[in-house]
Structure formats: C-alpha cells, structure tokens
Length: 143
Image (cartoon, rainbow, N blue to C red; front, top):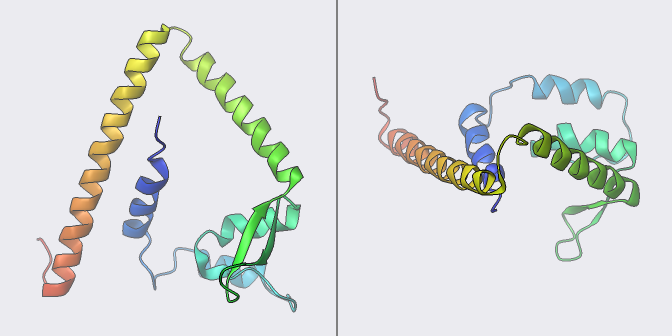
C-alpha cells in the first residue's frame, strides 16, 4: 500500500499554517533555543519541533550534506532505528487487534477503500490550493 498520508498532511499543513504567521512555533523556538551558543538545526524548517528533541535524545544525527555543503542531512542512529522498529511492531500489533473482526479479504477491501478516500482528499486539497493560488494572483477571495 502506498503511503500517501505524508503528502496529504504536508498539503494540509501548508493550508493551515501559512508562512509568516506564528501558530506558537516562533515562541516555541525562542524558548527552546534560549541560551544556546553552539550550532543548531535550522529551527525554521517546520519539522524542527520534531527534529530538535530527536537530536537531543540521540535518535538522529546530523552531518553536512555530501551533495550540498550548505545543507545538513539527518541520519537515524542505531538507537533511533531500535525505536522505529519497536514502534512499527507495536503499530502492526495494534492494527491487527483493531481489525481482528475482519477477514483478510475484508482488510484488503478496507485498505483499498481508504486508499481511494485518501486519493479523493488529495485531489480536494490540490483543488483548494489551486483556487487559493488563483485568488492570490487576482487579489480576490470567495465570499
């Protein structure tokens, strides 16, 4: 099954959290970075709220990108992989428990239907983004 959730979540995030408007992130980073004097992961990447604690916990590490000296790349550590593996196992067990009343065929049907629903939601978000972009270009909004 293709995981389209990440793309859909990114589109919704862009609509819900436009650049230039704080939804608590600026305050979060100001508090988090207070007193820090050494190098830090660029906090304005949007995912910094997740990555900073992962770096601090030793679950990921950062290195200069081998293809772009200006960029940093994140890599999962052994400890991070162990956490990821455990979460994947627990998630699979939880899903199996939740869907235990369904046969294998019914689970496959459910997954196919959910994929179709996600595809429809992706199209709806794309349409909304296109409308908003067109409105921004023309300076009008739907009333």
